[in-house]
Length: 262
Image (cartoon, rainbow, N blue to C red):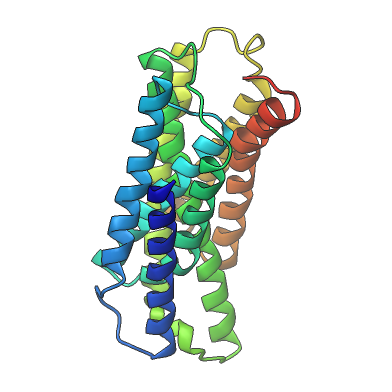
């Protein structure tokens, strides 16, 4: 549990450093927040590896998957923040990653039985897609907040921590495009490697995932063909992400925590 405490404290420290950066109105750029964030991501990943060693295989159950998505979001935030002006994401993402890790550490571990390499590949692609598209959803919320503040001529200090509106919007759609490709690969591997959707209680999960895929695809086509942006892009992004959350974590919550099925 020591490694969990270290990771959680470092995540909180990185978020606190980012808050201080906004409060002091410092110019954007790579700063000391990246050091605790990087070590926290390593410790987070290390805890999963140690847990998998103890149970003799990858743990992909509800809280483990939640923690892995948090890890992926923290890693992407670290990448975005050190390469541009999206370090502000860490104020939201790092505490979420710490909370997801703590939840996993407190609920015990068990290996995912009956998953060969093909189904594990499908699961890993799904987790990467969810992490990437969750970041896109947060970017959509920031875009909405930024547009709302600018329309009202409310020039808050936190606006200086964000990139210009067009740059933020561009990053949003790049994230959606990458997540869409990963989600496409997830669905394809599901079709190829999952043989009995009804016996494995996967039909509702598949339907919701396909609906989310269609929504993200329609948004990308709308952006390319009709120049969709602003509130419309935010609405489509959040609706598609809500479907994806219901597809994966909603179904896992009901099956594993309510019905007690693996």
